[in-house]
Image 1: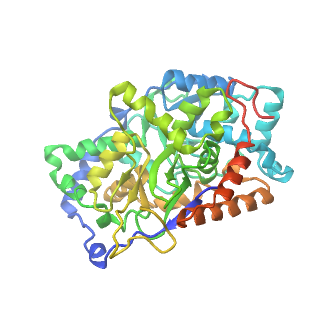
Image 2: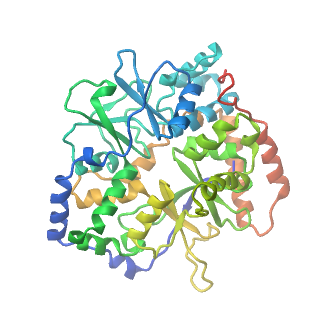
Image 3: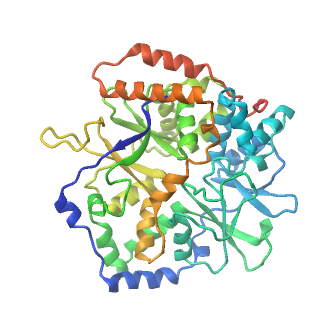
Length: 464
């Protein structure tokens, strides 16, 4: 393992800052809520529905994801109803499962019927996309009626649990698993659940963009002022910014496969990539990067590529397509405003931005166990949870999402021996980053071990 599955780090802020937490006036909040309740979810649809037959192969589904340039596919069951979704998180989970198949004990496979089904299908040479739909446990199917409002979306995107119209075709999945990001299908006025009866998809990112636009309107000046306060004044409502924020990270010298495993096992859609010397934030790698770069490569070699080189591949298309350099663009400061943070999330197409702090010799902002300048993170879910509280949505708890989204990771069921080895390597990586002297032997041994794991290219035979 690399730098550490999760870095428990503390963003230290003064008591005065915490005491100055912003309180909105009841009249302002009531005014915002009235407008939100009058805004329909169907008016902010950001994606068309691309539906595929559940019996097509995972490889075919990957090709369609890439060719259609869409964030997810809707999976049709035998009766032509929409039974689930398939996205790049599922692609990453599937490829990781293939690469780590040898680490699964017989008992672990028996405890995971879904994994057993995939391995059985792989031996036949055809893995239907239906059994890989939501393999990542991060994109269950949520359906809202045609008259759903923006507040209805907040109730899905920002609540710790949601048991509304969620279609879960797999009895083996845990019913209380909560995704780290969401996609919602909006229905037409018809009652059936076929492809033609849905009018589009709304993502959590599109909802955040709507709130950003709402705050820029002349009549929303009070909300704009509210969001113009620095992040550290929202610490009580942003747990990932507060004490013991959980950051999933790895070192820039680790292979791509390590990043894939971390995202699958930790239930996140992106991870921080840190410089080996000092642990300074370099960039981030996401499941979308895996889908758009690893899948088309048709080669196992890319899995052993150091992340610092993989990041250069991510950067490459940006300047060539629009002349803009968006690298690195994944961090904000504790003093950055909430509005700036929202704009950064939207501009970089990231699900989370990392919070960094410039070093200060007189008053260090990191705990003794942390390193570099990484202090926390802010995600789209965190910010939507803030809006949900303003809308009086009940049972808002983004930390519950963080507690549950790792619970059912299919790639976390490796043998105890493999898990022990990973934890040992994780501790080694952390010491490496904290130390001013790097242990080249440990790094080289881990690279060789990681490079020995292979995964079939999407065009090759599935794992089995």
